[in-house]
Length: 156
Image 1: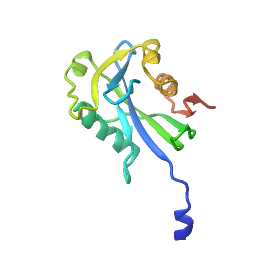
Image 2: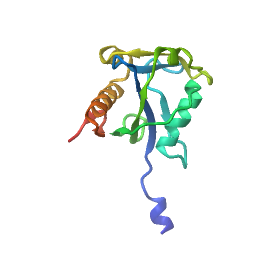
Image 3: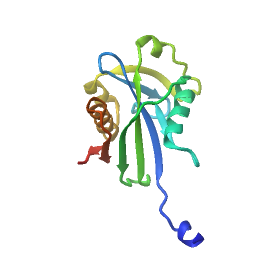
Image 4: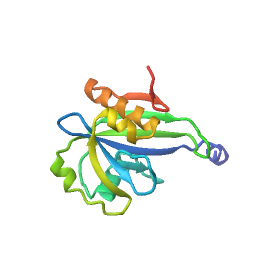
């Protein structure tokens, strides 16, 4: 059994949180370590549940404690270049006000700024795969569903 378990495939995972404002704009964060913007979130640590990751990352990145809503997206990401395959999750963070964003504390230095952007503006700032994932999350939020995606493209 140990040999079987040792031979099982390992996948990397990450979790993000979709926040919107009352105008249906999406909260994006500007990382200090790369040019593309992100939604709040990050990599799942060993022995950590994806929803626990999302909650932890909100505290680490934004100084925010907030309960998560439902799962909006599960995205299988193909291996690419040096990156192994992955499973990405997006959870509903609910509605934020501009004053809540203004009160955010970028405590770990990983995030430089945060702001609300409509989908067209978000597409300009996000990596294409994440832009597609965010669009699927917005659709799932409106439809009351969970979107299944492959490399950011919604599947049946």
